Image (cartoon, rainbow, N blue to C red):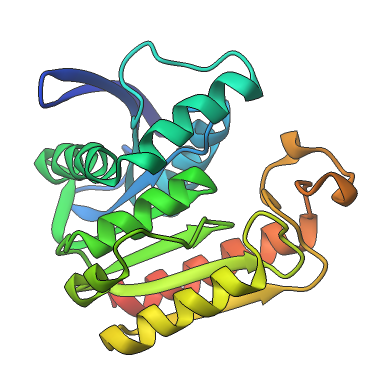
Amino acid sequence: MITLTVTEYEDGGTTCEGYLGFDDAINGRRPGVLVIHDWMGVGPYVEKRVRQLAALGYVALAADIYGKGVRPASMEEAAGLANRYKADRSLMRSRARAGLRALKANALTDTKRMAAIGYCFGGTAVLELARDGADIAGFVGFHAGLQTPIPGDARNIKGKVLVLHGADDPLVPPGEVLDFEEEMRKAGVDWQMIIYGGAVHSFTNPASGNDPSRGAAYDEKADKRSWEAMKSFFDEIFG
């Protein structure tokens, strides 16, 4: 049975509130996966992903970048919040580190087998967590923003990196993709990118609608394929 609990933790005096999910039919420690939300914050979508990961046998924590009770009610509010953290990568990294500490502290987590995944804004945060030198096995970004103001920090990346990208994503243009590739290459990172033809931004989220001309839309094939790619990646890094 999948158990989902509300979990509070602190980051520099700010209380954060996320979801912890695990299968209580499994005994002992198991790999831990940090999940970082999109720009809408901790809500039903990230909760669904935590449940899915728990069903696969992981203990998963939905990190809260915005802080307890900060839940945008509109896309405009979400954009404002996300931009605050994009403009302050130190704060973004700090909030991601706090979530990772909370997951590591859980008695169910095998701290030698951990990964972080994120969606859209959360994918950007996961890549910043990697650049910050988090000592975990892997990092996965689903339709993530790839740009960073400090590309030299890629030399700090310790784990493997997987980026799952929509070929027609207007929010992450080809130039940004090429810059990311060069960043990873220069830093000697073990990285890979899978590009899904026809997919635009937010291709894993049904709430994005079905009109690719808007720049963000759900793509069922890309959603399923990217989830399977993540699972294969986890099989590799967790053994």
